[in-house]
Length: 112
Image (cartoon, rainbow, N blue to C red; front, side):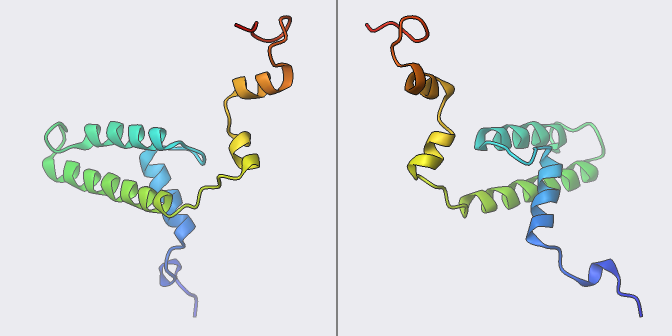
C-alpha cells in the first residue's frame, strides 16, 4: 500500500521555507527585511485596503500573519553568538579597513 505525502507531519524546515515564501524573503534576511516584507504584504491583503472579495483578503491576511508568526517564533529562539570571531565576521567593512590600514594617510583616514 503506497503512503500518501500528507501522512507525515511537515518538518520544521518545511514550515519555515513556506513562511519565507509567503513573506517573499530569501534564505538570509535581517529582522528589518522580515518586518518590511510583512508590512508590505499585509498592506496588500488587509481586508480594509484590498479590492478583492473580503473573504479572499481575510484568508490571505491570515496566511501572511501565520507566516510572520512562524518566522518570528524561529528568530526569537535563535541563539546569537557574541564571540569575537562571530561578531567581527558581521562587522561593518569600515572596521576591517581600519584594522588593515589604520590611519595611514595613503589608504586610511588621516588622524584628527
